[in-house]
Length: 300
Image (cartoon, rainbow, N blue to C red; front, side, top):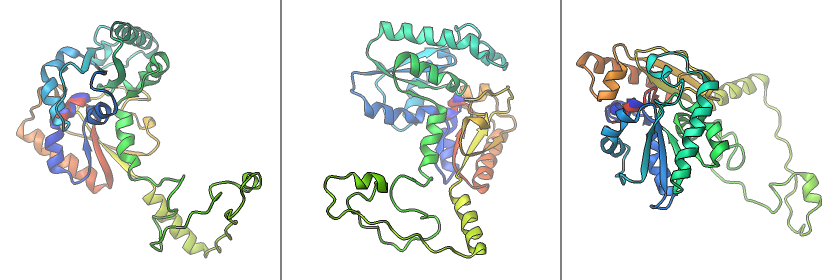
């Protein structure tokens, strides 16, 4: 829930891993990428709930925001979207056309909008439709989780390989054409000093190979932890609570007694705060490399 941003500071004090309780932690990166005169459209489930906390919530993300730069727009009046407040399944085929129509209308009236941030964790299913219709970059809870998780994953395109297993501490010297396949190397005009094919490494014993595979698999499978409200709704692909929204492992931990109203108000009872602390520690103990929440108001 995007309202979990209310608990960002608390979670940060508890955890030793990165904590990103709301997609709004991406605000500093987004703001830095555009001219100060550009506007960012922030879509939320209900702007009447988010606007009163705008300054506090933005500051909890680690920066001061100009109040006129981030344009907050609620989705509560889009036909079918009231299912979010009711805890029901949101009819994608009904809501998506209304979502696109609303956003296109806003952009027509404000040509300074250069990007879109989806604050509500039930909005990612509409991100692709908005990208296609507007041609603008769209950030959401899933791009936020991917940003932190990717920092733990091996980059297969360049750099050292198999670094999770062993490395001799030296970087291979680059030779001209080393990044090309043999067919492309043959077509080079300047072939002086072209890299020669490297001999294939000798095969390891079956036991050693299995051990290496197991180690690489573990290192190459960072786990995302998601703190959940004590609230159930049928998640769809794209929702932060749907395992199918990710291409990596996700662990979910519900906090007993933590309601949407608490997240929206930014306050927990002492008992719920203890449960919240236990949830963060449990996710870390399970090996999660980063922790987020299923309510964006956990950010404060």
